[in-house]
Every structure is written in C-alpha cells, then in structure tokens.
Image 1 (tube, rainbow, N blue to C red):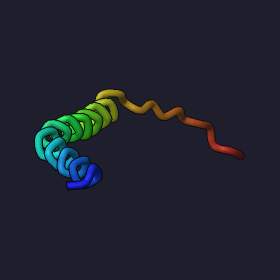
Image 2: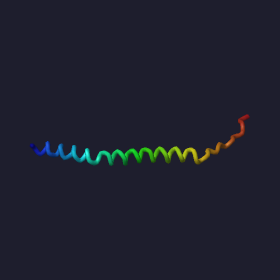
Image 3: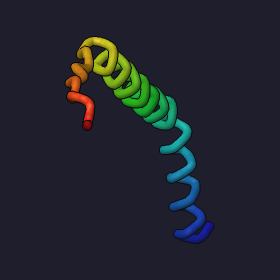
Image 4: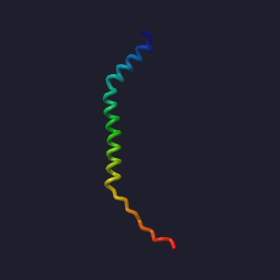
Length: 55
C-alpha cells in the first residue's frame, strides 16, 4: 500500500475511535450554550422605561 493509503486508513481509524467523544463534546457545548442563553433571558427581567407622550 502507498503512504497516502496508509494515511487515509490511519485517519479513518482515528475518526472511528474519537468521533463519539467529539460528538459528546460538541453536543454538550451546544446544549450548554442553549441552556445558559435560555436561562439568562428568563432570569433577567426587562425594565421598560415609560416615556411621556409627545404633544
């Protein structure tokens, strides 16, 4: 086998071994940002300032 083929086989093995960990990490980061963003928007009330009507 050529060196390029061996490199692709090694890359495929590496991806097969580590892709579950990468998916868990990416999913956790995605869920965490959604959770924190949703929590922040609900926990901080928005204060609306009343402006006097323009006459």
